Image (cartoon, rainbow, N blue to C red):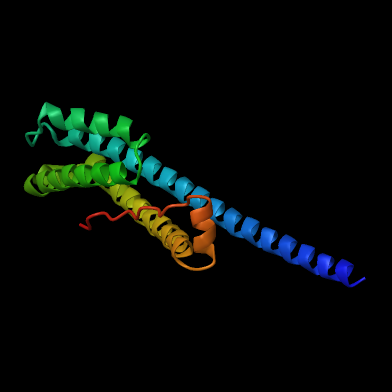
Length: 176
């Protein structure tokens, strides 16, 4: 009888421990999937921004000198954005932000552009997309923080090492 009780207790402990490991594993997977989904939303927003930049370059190129390579770079970034990981997204973000800065300088230097209705609409849409990117980046980085904390703390760090869950990379964009 004692062996049966000891065996049942031992079996219950093993089952509870196994369920706990499964729960931690599933949380890692949920956070990873949420991070990937949010990164996908950032990619879509960046693609929208690149579309706006292309339209803005078309709108201002008669006033300001934009090289042919600017449009080619935008086109290349647009095709690369959906394939990239967090590092690639940062490079595309920085490059597109520089182009946007150049466009803003051109708009400031040519009063006719400031009053152009189409340029105003495109600039407003670009600002809206900037806000969207910032919101998604904030969400992504919060997910990464929670995931990476789980990788670092006991007991979830043991599960992370058992299943080779490495740290996720933060998105750190230049502000401006």
